[in-house]
Image (cartoon, rainbow, N blue to C red; front, side):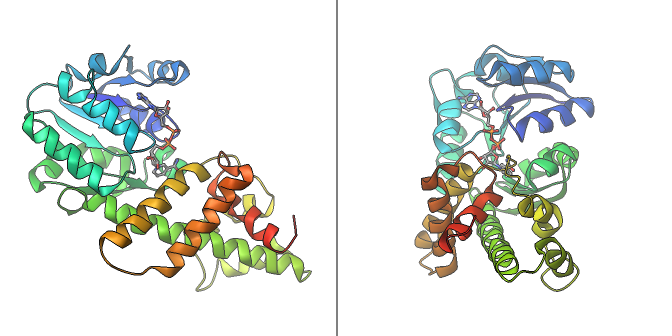
Length: 292
Ligand code: NAD
C-alpha cells in the first residue's frame, strides 16, 4: 500500500483522505486548521505538524487547497513539498487552479526529480463523501497510470485528458457549464414563483425532461427552500470563473455566456454572499427583479 502525504483537509480533502485510509493506505495529513487534523486522526490517518512532516516519507503527495497562491506556497515554499519530498515522489495537485500555475509547478518539480499531475475534480462535496468524483488529469501517461489505483478509490470517472495543465482546462470548462446551469435554474425559479406556479412542482417536471441535470437532481429542493450552506462556496466559484475567462483569452476565443455568468458570480460575492453555496446565485437573480 502507498504512503500518501495529504495537504488540505477541507470540505473536499477531508473525506478524500479518509477514503484513502479506508482503502488501506497510510495517510499523513496536514492542514492549517487543527480540527481537520483531528478528523483525519479519528478516521485512522496520521496528523502531521507541518508540510515537511507530511511529505518526507510519502510515495505520493496530494494537495487539495483553495487556489494557486496556497498551492504555490505549499509546493514551492521554503518548507514546502519540493524541499522535503523524496526523489521520484509523485505530486498530485487536485485543487482547481490556473493552468499556467500547474505548468510552472510541473517544471519546478521536474528540476527536483519530482513527478507531477494536475488532477482537479468535479462532483462537489457529495462526490467527495461518496467517493464518486470525476477526476480529470493532466501530465505524463506513466504518472497517470501510477496514480490510477488511488484515483479509483476517490472517483468513478477517472480520465487522463492530456499533458500538464490539461486537467485544469477541462475543469475550467466544467465550471463554466456548472455556473451557467445554476444561473438558469435560478431564473427558472424566479419565473415560476413570480407567475404563481409552485417552483418545486415545476422543477420536478424539468428534472424528468430534456432540461434534466445533476444540478436539478441534487440542488432543486435546497434552492427552492433557500438553503445555501456550502457545498461549494461562491468565493471559490468566483475564482473558477476567473480561470475560465482567462483561459478563453489565452485560447483566443470568445465565450460570452461565460463572461455573463462570471459577472453574476462576482455580483453574488459583492453582495456579501461569498461564503454561501454557489446555488446562492439565486439571490442575485432575485435582486435583479427586486424579489427575495
Ligand atoms: P476548503 O476551503 O474547504 O479546503 C481547503 C483546505 O486547505 C482548508 O481546510 C484550509 O485550511 C487548507 N489550507 C489552506 N492553506 C493551507 C496551507 N498553506 N497549508 C495547509 N492547508 C491549507 O476548500 P474545498 O471546498 O475543499 O476546495 C478545495 C479545492 O477543491 C479548491 O481548489 C476548489 O475549487 C476545489 N473543488 C471544490 C469543490 C467543492 O464542492 N467544495 C468541488 C470541486 C473542486
